[in-house]
Image (cartoon, rainbow, N blue to C red; front, side, top):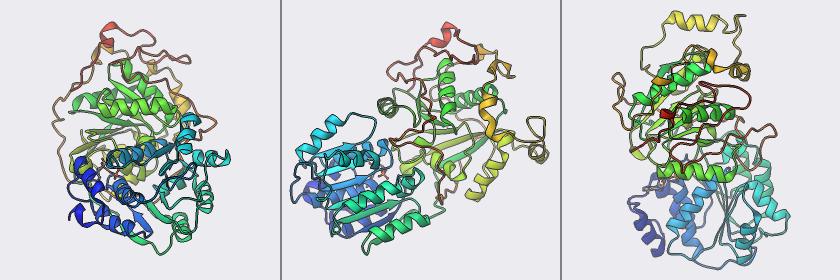
Length: 498
Ligand code: AMP
């Protein structure tokens, strides 16, 4: 297998070589010749498979002929989130370095002015989130009848985020004779319907079939108490125990991302926060700082679970057991990429046993416990006893629990124990590397809104300060947590991370 046999132009091949891509990935091998030939593609592939280059490379080749006209872009790539759109733009920058193509990135959260200017100059490629694209269209800044190539990327995620009506509307504004490339990790019925409607005799290319082994990810579980303060302490212990280069820490709720972020900062961790309610500049700055290693830990909601290409994440910590089992697959998929070894550990408290079982059912294997599995009796108790004393789990009532001062938890009051994380400490003694199986998910919930439309009830976490090794603690107005507003000086020392 070689890139030179795929029909790519010499300019593209030279950029591929400069990018250090030696052999095409399976999706590239199969999709590139089809796209170069001008045919439609239905690609069933996840991020991490090289699918972005599988459409960027042949698009570059095809766009070498012809020129863009003012406000009439020649190709359009739709992405569900701003981050993904920005990543695709980066691919165009790297792989299109021998081309003089104009790429316009139309995403929400940033001003219209620059985007208008790019469109006025004539864009060969528009990379957009659906909402912002339609905004430009409605404002009369953009004509869509010059589009020769349409890419709908991460279609199933568009579905999760409620963008399908916008996508359909956009498709109807495009010329009928265009080439359409449609990518989705899964094919729920609604996505299949859309593909049937907008693709013409597509070549169906499926890579990484269900139950693909993510053999390089070591997965482990760790018991954690139910109370938030104790759970945070368990997380810190886990983070210090293992050999962490950089890690994403996933929470189920945006609010908890903010709480955890502030708590980890107070405890000397070099951490940033990422969730869908942060404004675009904060999100971009945080991601850049994480990519460059300025911050080593990222507390994140599921906004970071899919699609973000953050190379070499050594660890994933699931602070919360995801409610939907397929989110687990996406979260841990951020580590162990491109054949590298990855490690994913999850805190599990009594109330999480049921959600854990669902994950293990999806994986079709059990995940080993770092410190011994809970006994059957414990598991039975957890199923039967009610944490509120009434015999009922209060799953939907986390916020009320969280509002308790965390000083009431059993693990607070030991600040001296809370040192900054070891940089590259040794792996936990009873953690063994093993082969694990990974499965693609079937569908996803609508529980995280990450595009340009913010939920009305959204809450904004405090801004990150990625350029500072450690920001000052941010006192919580509504409640006292951990040690309260006072932080001893030794905890304010910068943390060095190799
Ligand atoms: P994607 O699935 O498009 O998100 O790509 C995942 C990562 O793989 C990105 O960092 C790409 O730059 C990289 N990549 C894509 N194709 C290749 C290739 N043929 N060889 C090496 N790396 C690649």
